[in-house]
Every structure is written in C-alpha cells, then in structure tokens.
Amino acid sequence: MGLDLLIRGGTIVDGSGGARYRADVGIEDGRIVEIGRVRSAAERTLDADGLIVAPGFIDGHTHMDAQVAWDRIGSCSCWHGVTTVIMGNCGFALAPCLPAEREWFARCLTAVEDIPTEAMMAGIDWTWETFPEYLANVDRLPKAINYGAYIGHSALRMYVMGKRALTERATEDDLARMAAAVQEAIRAGAMGFSSSRATTHVTPDNTPVASRIADWTELDRLVGAMAELNAGVFQVGPDVSGGEAQRRFLARLKQLALQTGRPVMFGTIASRQGDKPNPWTYQLEYLDQCAADGARMWGQTTTRSINAIFSLKSYLPFDVLPAWRELRGLPLAEQKRRLADPTTRRRLIAEEAGMKPRDNVFQGGGAATTDPRRPDYANLYAMKGVDWDDPTVAQLSARQGKHPVEVMIDLALANDNQVFVQPLVNEDPEHVLGMLRHGRTLATFSDSGAHVCQEMGSSLQTHLLSYWVRARQAFTLEEAVRKLTFDNASAWELHDRGLLRTGYRADVVMFDEHRVQPAMPTVETDLPGSARRLVQKAEGIAATIVNGQVTLEHGEPTGRTPGVLLRGPGARPA
Ligand SMILES: [Zn+2]
Image (tube, rainbow, N blue to C red; front, side):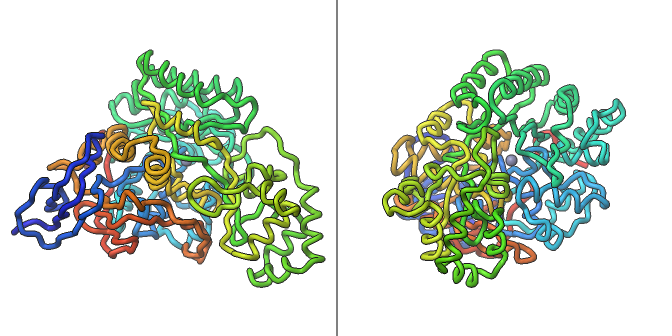
C-alpha cells in the first residue's frame, strides 16, 4: 500500500533555519517517509499550493496537566500550530498526589493558575497517586497533540511531607524519599523536574507554595538525583521580586547548574514591576556568563508582553470595590442595564478613587486581576486588533474628555467582548526583540492551560509569525519557524520532532504566511462545569497534522486524536 497522507506542492520551511524550497511530503505510519516530487499513491492528498509547510510548533512552558483530561484537542495551543507541549511547569503538577489531597491540589492550581476547581473536580477522572501512574493516565487519554510532563516540586513535597511541606525544612528522610521519587519519575519518562521560587506563586491561604519553602540544599539534592541518571531538565519559576533578591537567586541557580550539569530553564522577562527590577539585558548577560563557565542554561522568552486581560465577561480591575462587587455578581444583561444608568455609573466611577494605590510589589496575572491596584491607565490598552498598536485607556480618556472608568464602561457596553489589556512584563516590543534574538533563549512560555481567565499566552507562535516576521520583518520566516520547532525540540531533546526530514515524526503545520495571525480573544464558558475561560483562535492556518493524522483543518477539529505521551530521554522500559 502507498502513503497515508501526501502534502502536495507546498513550500517547505523545514525547521532548521535553512532556506525554503518547493516539495511534496509523503507520510506513512506517522512518519515522514518521502520529500520531493512524490509519485507514490496516497490515501489522502492535501493541496498545499501557496502554503508554507513546516514542522508542528513545540511549546515547552504550559500548564495543561488538568486540561488534558477534558480537552481532547489541546486548545488554545492547538489553534496556533502547536503539536507538542511540555506541562507540569513551575512545580505545579497533579502528581504525585494522595487521594485525600486532590481537592487541595485543585485549589492550589486555582489560586496560582486560575484553573477553576469546579472544572478540575468535574473534568478529571482522578485515578492516579504516583507520577508514573499519572503518566500512564495521560498516555491513555485521547488527545490531539503530544504531551511531555515534568514532575513538579510543590506536588512532590506535599506528597512526601504532607502539610509540613508548607512550613518546614525537609528532613534527611524527606529528602531521600523525594530524590527517589524524582528518579522514579525520570525513569518513567518525565521530561525533568520543575520548581518555583516566584513570589507570585501562593497557596489559597496566600502563603508560599511548597516549593518556595524548600532551601537550596533541597534543590541541589533533587536536581542532583537527575544528574545521577544524566537525564532531565530543571525548570524553575524565577524569583521576580527584583533587585538583590533576584540577583542572589540567579547566582545560586548558576551554582546548581554548574554542579549538576543538567539543563536549566527559567523565564526571562523585561519588567518595570518589582523592587528595583534587573534589566532584561542583565538576564541575557547572565545566560552568557553561565554558559562561559560551563552551565547549560536557557531563558524562556515569550514573543510579546505577558498581559493581565480584563473584560466585562471576566475580570475588571474594579470588581473588588463594594458597588462593583454588588453589580458584578448579576447576569450580564442586568449588569449592562445598570451600567447604562447615570446614577449607578457615577457611583461606580467615584469608587475607583478608593482603590489600593500602585506599589512596587510584582504582580502576575493572578493578583493583577483578583487583587488589583488602581490601574495605570497609560498601561491599560483597549484592544482593537492583534497588531500591538492599541490605544491606551488614558489616551481615549484624554481624547473623549471622559473619566477612564467611564471610557471602559462605554466600550464594554458597546461590545461586551471588549478586552482590556494590562501588560505585566515585556511592555516594550524592543526589549522582547532583544530577548528573542539572543542565542540562549527559547521562544516558548505560553502558560497555556493556566490563568484561563486572566492571561492569554497561547497565541505566542502566531504572534511571532504575524508581528515579528510579517509586520516588523525582524526575523525571516525560516528563523522564526526554527525558534518554534528545532530549537525547542533540541532543548528538550525530542530527537525525532522539530524538523521536516524523512524518518521524523509527521507533526506538520500548513499555513498562509501572508495571513497567519492570532484572532481576537473572547471569553467563553466551555470548561467542565461551565466555568469560563479566555479563548483565542488563529487565522491563516490551513491544517495541522500530528503523528501523520490531520487534527485541524481551517481551525476545525477533525475529531482525530493521534497525540501521544512523550517520554523523556531518561525513560527506561518498565
Ligand atoms: Zn508557569
């Protein structure tokens, strides 16, 4: 028999960064078997005339651990050409987990990542306890993209130490049990071990998550456990508080990287927030210095600002104020009726003056939406498109001679899908470009699956292609595709993905380079238990193929679920 699938007449951008060329791609049994003028018969042929044919995109920083249980297609990442994700980042994972602690885990994920507890309790068939059992569960689930997972430090610490994990240092016995569990996870196929030192990562009681209680000797021990097997990435949510604390964190992280030799990854960001933020250039020089000294270190960089997102249908910055709180619990139509009433309006606008003043405490998407400070309207954009050229609420307020809150109310009344965007970090596109251009950063860090109603990072890939390649011409398409494919495949040691080459897994995305771009985000209530989330799709992507099967055509799921669990390089057959 011939090929399963033939992609005919497309322009190949193969992921290596090399120049494009015209060719057909033949696929059989989930792998690319022919590239060129393919003459073999195929069960199905896709016409790629005028389209770019590239390897499927790889996103190494997601939190889809819970969502994988109920969302077969892997949204919103799947809509942006993503065919592979790594989850379990920042120490948050759903395994290992004792049955009695499931709800606490769910509530922690709600507190940190805004994944609704009700969605998790309704949407997950929670059968596992250990990390290998969790992987086996992911392996069985029907899924349209590929998933790799870290074992998460906060989960592991809670599993071994119980509630002591939230307050105490680990004993020698705790350390030995955690180290053994890390090795067990690596042998079962974990991509590595993740942790967090980020001040934004707190429990439902507003105390530090378990990983932040750990001291550095604990991290030395657990990353050292991976080093003994010579496998596994260490990913860490960095200290983002700024100043001396962040510099101390980075210095100690370097020591860990040098002594273990394991690949280390953390988020590089350009921030105006925090106490005396260290410039993004400091982080890049640090990456170079680490490499010069012999460490294997990457910065994870998204392709634009990381934003808190507000709308009438989700959060507004004013929700915590008494008059607003009263209003915001009502059905949408009733809220709109009252927002149109002049007396109510005046009261709502007047209340804004009493909001908490801005301070230099670093706020992520979580606190920025649930514990907001008085908005800086010059840093709050009324989104009108996806080209990063929206007006600020301050500009509209000056232009219209209206109070900024009134501007926002009017926009929300005119269009209840109106979105307001508050950049948390990476406000300046030139800073993002500086980070993206650096040879030791990876274009990843969508946080996909997390902050479901607070941020929308899942479109970083289509943003790179539409904004940085097409609008700004800062990268060639070949360079940008390489960042989303081969570079990430290399960093996570996915040895048969990330390139269009014969023998490689057939993860492929076909798109129109002149049209590809993110669509506007909207708030939907499509989570289990009808919980709400932000949804962002894309335009210009003709088809996505995972392990040789078409999973999306023109943005519509085909119903196929060819995605697989990816096991890391340390996996040993059971
Ligand atoms: Zn994260």
